[in-house]
Structure formats: C-alpha cells, structure tokens
Length: 477
Image 1: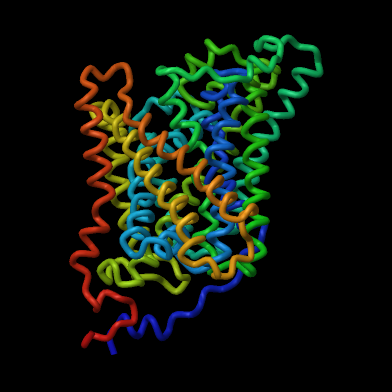
Image 2 (image 1 turned 180 degrees about the vertical axis):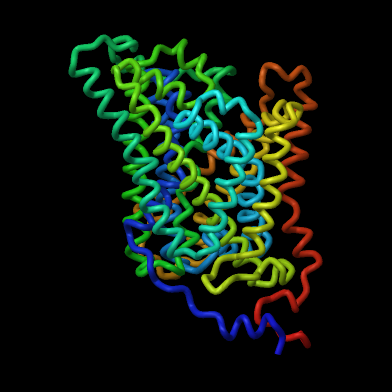
C-alpha cells in the first residue's frame, strides 16, 4: 500500500464544528477592511453612492450566488467545486488557482498595513524603518500560517474573536464618535446632505476607482471553503451570507461617513495610512490616548483578514490536489486537515515578495502594475462563479438546492448577469493605465501578460497529470 493510500484510509472525515455565526465571521473577516475607510471618506456623501454601486453589482449578486451554489453543492473546495460542476476540471482549477495566485501579490500589502498600524501602538516613526517593517510582516505572516496549520476549528475560533475585536468593535467605536460629533452640534466638514451629493461622479478619471469599488466586497465566498466543516450547510450558509452582508455594508458605510464628518478631504489626501486618519479623528475629540489601543485592535483586524484569505484559497487548492490535478506534494495534509504543503509554499513565496517589497524601491514602483494584475485575476474568478450559477440551472436543473435564488430563470439571469457585468467592466477598466505611466500600450500588455502567467498553470498541470497523483491511488495506478 502506498503512502497516499495509507493517508486516505487513516484520514478522518471533517468535524462538523461551524455554525451560522462562525461562517458569518469568516466572511466578515475576509471582507470588512478598516484600511479602506479613509480613502473612501475622501469622497464624502458620494461614498454612499459608490458603496451602493458595489452592493448592487457585486455584494448582493455574490451573496445570492454563493448561497445557492454552496447549499446545492456543499462539498469541499468552495468555488473550485462550484465551477467544476459547471465547466469541469479546467474551469474549477482555473477559478481557484486565480484566487490563490492573486493572494501572493496581495499578501505584502496587507502585511505592510499590519506592521505600519502596529507602529502607532509603539512609535509611529517605526513605520519608516524597513527592518522593523519586515520583521513584523514576517511575524504576522508565519504566525498566521501556524494558526492555519492548526485546522479549521482553531482558525474559526481565531476569526470569531479577532473579527469582533479588530473589525466590528473599531468600526462601531468610529461610528459612535461620528454620531456624538453630529449630536453635539459640532460643525462637520461635509456640506449639507442632499440626494445630488450622494450620486458619484463617473468619468474617465474615476473609472479605475470603479474597479476598486466592485471588488471592495470580494471574499464573500470564503465561508464556502468550509462547507465540509459546517453543521448544516443547506440551512446555515444562506443565513450566514445574509448576516455577514448586513454587518459588512452598514459598518463600512457608517464608519466611512463618520470619518468624513470629522476629517477634511485635504487631510485625507495627505494621509499615508489609516492610522494617520484615526489619529486625527481622536485628537479632534481630545482623546489622543485612544490611538494606541485602536492601533492594536486594527492590527488584530488586519491579521484576521490575512488569515481568512490565507487559509480559504489554500483549502480549495488542496481539494484540487486531492482530485489528482496536481502532484502528490500539494495534497499533503496534517492530522487537523490543513493543506500543509500549500500553506508552506505560499508562505515562502509571499515572504520573498514581501522582502523585495520592503527593501527594493524599484519593486514598490512596479507594484501598481502587480495590483492591477490581482484585479484582473479576481475578475476572472468571479466571472466563472456567476457563469457557473447560470450554467448549472440549465445543466442540472433538478439538483437539490435548499436555497434557490427567487424568480426562476429570470431571477438567476438577473443576479448572474448583474454580477457578470460588474466583473467584466472591472476587468476592462482595470487595464486603464494610471496617469504616471507614459506608455499605455506597454502597461496594458504587461498587465495582460502577468495575468496570463498567473492564470495558465492549471492548464499545464492538467496537461501532464498522472493517475498516480490522485489521493488514495495505488502505486500500480
């Protein structure tokens, strides 16, 4: 008997340890990002309009699509399992690999945010010290990886506590201070509210921002990766999606407006990070002593967000490997069911990119291009999800779906069509070069090439796959 056979026969089925609250907190941890609030607050009342656009074109569609797909096919792998049902191995593998590979470039940005935020609890000038930045970034990255290696039960507990401390509580505190500011009669820096002020200005200069808004709520599918660890996915998952969507939307909108009430737009333009905005906010209230505790809480929130994105796609890629679509190295799991090899591989690659990001200014200059590549990869992921939603209503109409998008086929086409339009438009505007790039065609070519390089590996793996790669296969196979 081969080693893979031994692993298959001795492996225990996943424990059913996640309920509605745990699933919802996984999504909230992945999506609710305080670091976006100051940049959105710059738009004042029109930030509401931008959030509504993102909600209509992405948050609602991905929540409904995820609920139907996860309850209809509550197997491991999340989006991999959903897209595979509709488009086979190539489609499913491409979707999950694009989501995983875009993380490799995104990890250093959230790690830098974590390190810079923690500096405000110590000495803010540390944020300019590359050695401090790298040490904290690595401690956060590898510490979170160790938590992920402990399995979904430990990861879930960490997310439940962390998202409350680091995401929900800071957001609520900011909202309360904003309400107190208004009720106290203190003059706000925003002009009087009007419906016209809510409408966003959409032109060639704001189109790249449109791409950011549509994908601002990306991550709502993270709970789907944990379907096998869910007590009752058919009932719990839709409730968790609705619960998390409500929390994310209202915390995001209200906290953004609270900051916009207090901090002038020109101050936000000058801010180099979220903690500068938070510091200005609390100093305005005469509460400078709250800056350090808030820095600690927001640091926790950043780590929790990192954990959600670190483990989710890795879990999905681990299922791909178990299906025999990647070499046996990638399907190695520990006794907790965590995909050991994939977690370690991504930690090593992410560490190298973070090292270059901190110490080589030329890499920082090129990072705008890499960020554009991550946008294109996510657009591919979600386009496949929305396409799978529609396709499966035709190819498997009788498959049990405890939660079905209401309205029959017109309802599915409306939800899937809105979501597909949002991500296709995002892909197109994601190719628009920023003003400081002198050669537009060169920029577009570089983004498309980078997207191709990070999206094509699944086709290579499938081209050379062998029967012996499948977990549980005998050596004779």
